[in-house]
Amino acid sequence: MKIATKKKLEGYMFILPGFLYILIILGYPLVYNVVLAFRNVNVKTFASHTDVFVGLKNFTDLIKDPTFQKIFKNTLVFTFGCLVFQFTIGFIFALFFSQKFTLSGPIRGLVLVAYMMPMSVTAMLGKNMFDVSSGVINDLLMKMHLISQPVEWLLQGKTAMGAVIFMNCWVGIPFNMLLLTSGLTGISQDIYESAEVDGATKMQKFLHITLPLVRPAIVAVLMLGFIYTFKAFDLMFVMTSGGPLNATDVLGTYSYQLSFTQYEFSKGSASAIILFLCLFVVGLFYLRMVSREDD
Image (cartoon, rainbow, N blue to C red; front, side, top):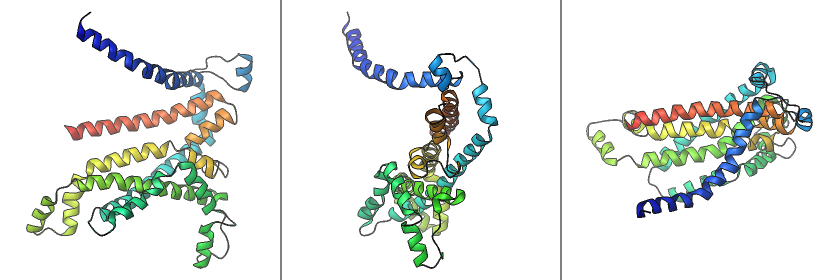
């Protein structure tokens, strides 16, 4: 056996355990989820082994279901609401911390603490902050005389959605700030100095130098932010359990409820596939944009 072929075989043998692990732990559940989505598996048919192939029926039933339509709308409202606030504030923070001043590094590190916390901990923190009787939000607003009595933040549809958006931005702002700061620090100061010599104002430098040069970082932040936010699960699951009346349910929590609360396994799988397809399309769009930037 040639030495090159032997080394190649050795390389495959080192890769094989990891490949088998991924195939079993990730590959099998994904394939089985797709199979479930095209059958009528629920708690009754699962126990009696009487499930049959139903084609796209689970998908059409979901799309026609008013509850699913509401939850899909919730997912979009939550995603775009978070993106607007966390990107805008994160960009402002990135511009601020890209400047050189005393203690800029330690302060930026403190801001990143929120991003480093597990989402379940953030959800519990938000649940306590927005609690109607002992929450710090109600206490602060009443002391500022902005409200006269405690608000039931997590028990009303619109305020509950606002509360989960607020807590997700709590985590997302440091993430946006971190990526955008790295993009801003990569811009050479010589470009700004040349623009100053030509008489450019601060706004002109921002519009014609900063924004174009930081565009790849902006695109990455928006696409990654969309993916991470669109597939949210643990924040709503811990903070509101999707309530009240599905007001904060998103595709992730609804798929879980269909599968493990209502035991509609096939519909839960179909909902998860719809979630995957949405993210798959966004991922393809992002890769296409990146390839154009490279060209």
